[in-house]
Length: 406
Image (cartoon, rainbow, N blue to C red; front, side, top):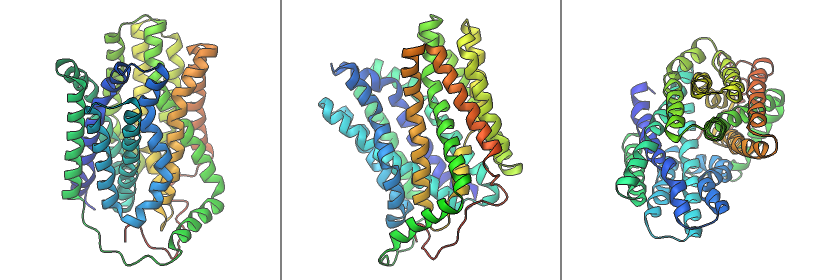
């Protein structure tokens, strides 16, 4: 598939949905607080979508080949729209959690189907660039969302923000419906075909257990440091350095701008020289930057540390998704990527939890040390224990099973 076709089928709806969900970042915590519930329930509301995604990763992977990629994308985006726009209604806290869980289920189906779509349709010689652009567009889409959402909620209401976010999701649904090519009508699935696909995944895991175990551990640590930094930097800025929210926001924005500027170089490095040329320095740089955070001492020091982290994270744009695509076996792409994304999502949940729990016991310096170790471990494991997958993907195992969506 040509890049122009990918732009309309994947990148455009991705940007629209990312912008819509970015609107919620600054408004959802405030909205949850205004419900008059405990801080524990506020945290449940804030994390409910992530929990829904985590619980749905593997089932969604198994569902993809049964309903097809196009239908999975449309169902996923529709669930996100419903789960988002419903927040504009007067709801009880229980229903708010339920609708956020529903949005998380939709996010899992949407994200996994797009990942599988690129894996199957992008030319393998440009897979790194295709997925890096995908990751970069997600970053760009999320970048302006918090500011716009905050302004809209202040000028109008949080309900207006939820409606706009839902509208962006609806536009993503329409773009996907218009530009994702229709799939051929599938014949009735033979009895036991689903079991055969999982047998293929198990065979792949047994045959390449060393590489896949190492890659999975690296994925876990990589997502820990990526997500943990989002909590560590603001906490250090406000509680240790006594910076105001505007200064912390400026630090995060500057890091995000540098992060977003690196997705094209990341894709070129992966395709031209190998996946490790982007992933290994990416997580090492992030670890160095995280290690600088406790010693920042001032606004400028924290800004420099955040820029190093942003540079590293940008250099890793799409690296773990590309590695997952390379490792996925032919004939069971969806099932494998569901497991792969589950591992990454566990790391994404574990990162902030590690910052909070370890910070309570040992202070934020202890949290930074743990994240720094996670980053260096991810880099070292990828360098020493995971084979390069650019030239010859290590686990393409042939099997007499239908391809995804046929």
